[in-house]
Length: 356
Image 1 (cartoon, rainbow, N blue to C red):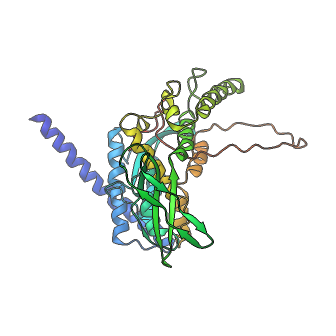
Image 2 (cartoon, helix red, strand yellow; image 1 turned 180 degrees about the vertical axis):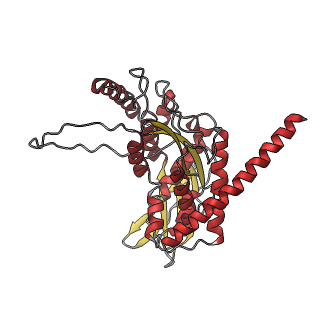
Image 3 (cartoon, rainbow, N blue to C red; image 1 turned 90 degrees about the horizontal axis):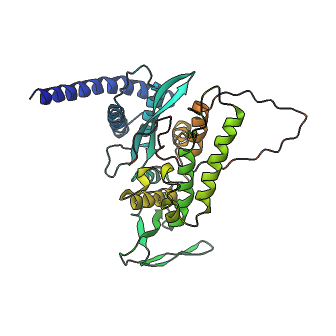
């Protein structure tokens, strides 16, 4: 009986604190949006409140809360600005966004920040709200191996629609989004199963970011030498080479040498749903969007995976003095940008709580 009372008391305290956080953060977000000529409507405010609840639950699962001194408050306000201006609802079913916690170092001290990602119908919602010249977004076609399918044909401005005959058997091999445009014409966004391979490679790459392979205790120690860093980078390159050598997505997922750097969200019963979600995201996220406000556009850009990758480097990479000789002509080789950021496997930096 006493345990039930204690649990009830904790739930009451959680709800009471959540109401306080909502009042404080909502006032702050509304003021910031007004500074950028944005007046939040009731649905946008509800999106922000739902996001706060989701973030609070995410922190609670880690034994943390918004008021913790090591909490990066800017990550909270950034997320609230993003979900409210982009109309992304954490309480929608299927969900449109998810939240994760991440530990990082700032000035030698460990901090906690929150991050958000799009899931489920999140990209569909963005397409409906902000897609250029879009009148209606049709339900996605999940085309399976044994289905009949004919690709659309394009002759000048004329489009012959794709043809899909459902068979209902086999893995989903492509996703098709039919779009009805404002001028009455139609467009079809198509993503193939093979297109998910780069997403998985980037996921593995990201999970290798903090891996030390036993060379040092932490990759971010100031005492890490260039030789040690080179050894870690060589090992990372070897693992990525193994992953890239596989011809298809399934062979990467089934390779025991790579299992350590692939999160549970890609495995077991989750595997097929993850692949379908990636195909859906790949199909719609590149379609042009008009946000009508530079601040809203910046909120969308902050969710871009390349932006997040650079921000991670800023947060985590130790500041090192690099000796450059100006007289030497140096040819810079651009590294491929990360395509996806997924759940990070825990090494010395336990970062991600879960992935939906």
